[in-house]
Every structure is written in C-alpha cells, then in structure tokens.
Image 1: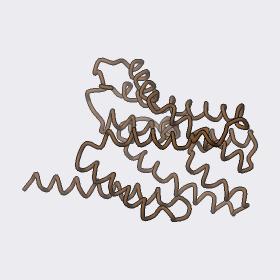
Image 2: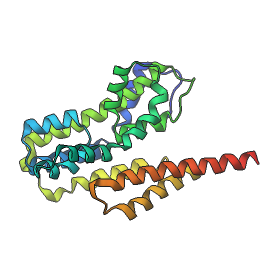
Image 3: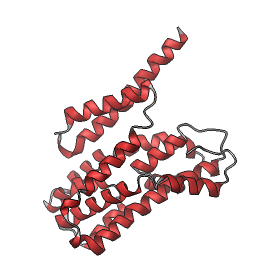
Image 4: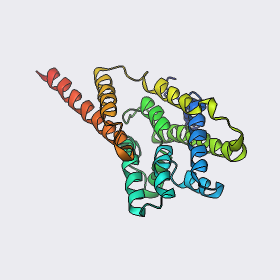
Length: 241
C-alpha cells in the first residue's frame, strides 16, 4: 500500500489498521496457540488475562511458563524474559527518531504497543523520519497498525477462554502463524543489505537454535544488525572511492 502525502491523520490511522488485516489470521492463530499452551501449563483464566495484558509478548510468555510452574527463582524468570524481549530494545531504537519529541509517558505507551508484525509494517512504510509527513500522520499510522495488532492478539485470548477446550490440536494453528511471518519478512528483502542481514540472522539461528532460554532469538537479531551495519559501511566506502 503506497503512502499518500495528502492523507490526514484519520486516513493514516485507517491505513495502518488495514495493513494489519493481511497478517491477521496468522497473528490470531499464534495468539490462540500461545494462550492455549499457557492455560494447559497450569495458569487459570484470570492469570492468563493478566499476563497477556501486562507482558504482551507471546514468545517470552511461552518461554517462562516452565520456569513459573517449576518454581524457579524470580530473578531467573526476569532474566529469561529480558533476554527474549531484548529485540524490542532494537525495535524501539529504530522507531525512536519518529517519536523523539514526545514526553516520557506517551513514549512509554507507544513502546508497550510495539510488536513484531506491527513494527515490520511501520518500518516498511516509514523506514526513516521524513519531512513529507506530519508528526501526527506518522503517529496515527503507527497507532493504527499497533492497536490493531494488540486487538487481534487479545481476540485470540478471548477465543481461547471461550472455546479453548474444544480446539483440536490437529489444526496446526502455530504453523499458520509461521507462514504469515515468512510472507511478511520476505517481500521487504530488496537490497544487498537486507538480503545479507536476513542471511546472517538465519545462519545464526541455525547454529544457536539449541541454546537455552530462547537465546537464539537474541543472537540472530544481533547478527542481523551487525551484518546490516557492516554491509552499509562497505557500500558507503565504495561510493566514496
């Protein structure tokens, strides 16, 4: 979907929400799989809702469940959660220039809404700050995508609470979520930098997949960023020679 410079904030809000319709089925499926696994691990519905609203990070929620149910020390649970969610530090740094003029509490709220798929949709539309769009247009597009992402996730939660016991395991909902992520990640790979960055992340993931505490996610993100920076510097150096 191409951006229209004449779009008002309301149109940008709608555009952001519309873009989330594309991965909605996969995101909903991933929410159902995650929340269903958490209930089966031993949390009751009230605890499930609290975790979904406060943590709002499916991968870390799944990862810490065995630790919670195994009565591991609280510092271990916090450490694992921090390691897995450390990618959001990079995500936050990527979008921070767009919202640097806002005060702390609004930025805290925007950070809470930041999620994998909505982040990808936002950075595809606005990879860098631009003077062609007003700050309100950029903000409303971000809110459209990220609030839609949040709503789809919570709809999956409600679905599990109501119909969880009737969902057959043979549906393979988790695989549907993976397919949607692949469909979203592949199209933006259009340059040497993005291609090599993706390859670095993929290779790193293969070699670190068996590490505990989902550390493969952290190392893959780091490898991707380092590769992108390294390739960009080589390209820039070549241009100046």
